[in-house]
Image 1 (cartoon, rainbow, N blue to C red):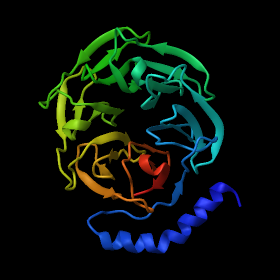
Image 2 (cartoon, rainbow, N blue to C red; image 1 turned 120 degrees about the vertical axis):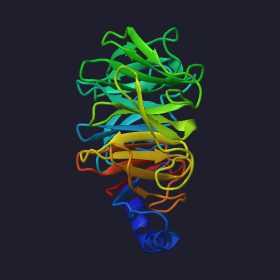
Image 3 (cartoon, helix red, strand yellow; image 1 turned 180 degrees about the vertical axis):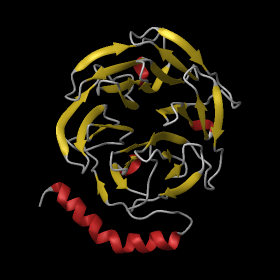
Length: 304
């Protein structure tokens, strides 16, 4: 029996108990995941505290605390792609994205830059520097080729760069008013063409147009439906629905693009359908949410 099959069998044995506990828990909409995979370790395919993810052409790329960026198919099988950034002694990347050519954007957070790799792990280019950027947490690229880089630490802001990496505009500062931030963790373009921002320590999402004008806020602190406790990642699915993962509430919430709450999935714990300090998620073309279950050192896949 392979190691991966061992874990699948183990989770299957635990299913009846987990399903009962999940039903009795109440207060959370959803169901058990259709797939759970992952194992803590440093061998190829293993993960240690995975922290960011993105899907490119049906390959799920995951970066973990060892600074490895690894590729998996949508069923959790390792593709053989595994690489690291040039140096990670000061810290590991904490954000992944995709550019307009289908290349991987790696937010080399502690090195104040965004590195572009092809899907085989070859470094293509680097934009940004310590003179330009603070702690880089996420990066997205619009249809015109502009990059939007989320920063926090010394600077709580979003920086807009042209395709060559030159600064075009910056907006945001530390605070809790509209247009201010406390630890921007993730960015995503909505179906409306606007930029959705996970403002983690303000426990909310903010929405901006591409010129940086504030449009609206979604959520606020709490654990009720539609509220947040450290939202750390967000993504839109093929159904145009917005999915948000929260570290503090250990769940994923689903919204319409205008911020109307639809449902939630997950709860704190170690069993199936339970999450421990989840940092990230990615939605595939089938609408399945791949949740990066960080402190459980695994990925759970759910459609809800």
